[in-house]
Length: 176
Image (tube, helix red, strand yellow):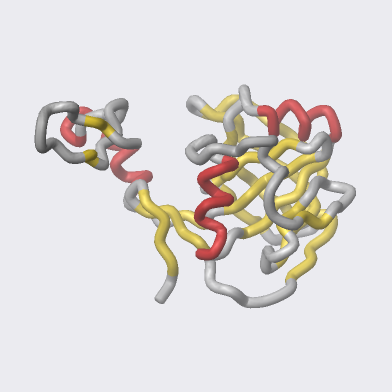
């Protein structure tokens, strides 16, 4: 976000006017900001999608995927209706895509209007993603201010080993 100061000689400042001042943020929020998280794109038939940085994979019989998502998101409505969704780990080249699906970047024509997409039974995935997982919804419950979604991983399609896009202290980062 930009704050525009209209005084003569003033410049545009890169300040989020809605950000909670650092001294007033909750300790849990500050701790969460210090944990690097993978940036993923969750999509569902409809199509609907959401950038999610709280995704965890648990190996087992069956393999599972867990994540915290916005219970009021279009993604949740579509995933709940379909009973399935896709998860694609994003790479550093996907920063703008991540912002678009997080609602931070304009998306004229809709979220899926730009870029090249691969249709899957679980939802569309970016054609240039390094891979994706097809998940069947298992359970969901309120968890804090989010919805804890647990799914069974039914298929995994890995293409390459590109480095991940990470979210750390409110910004995107990449492994160097």
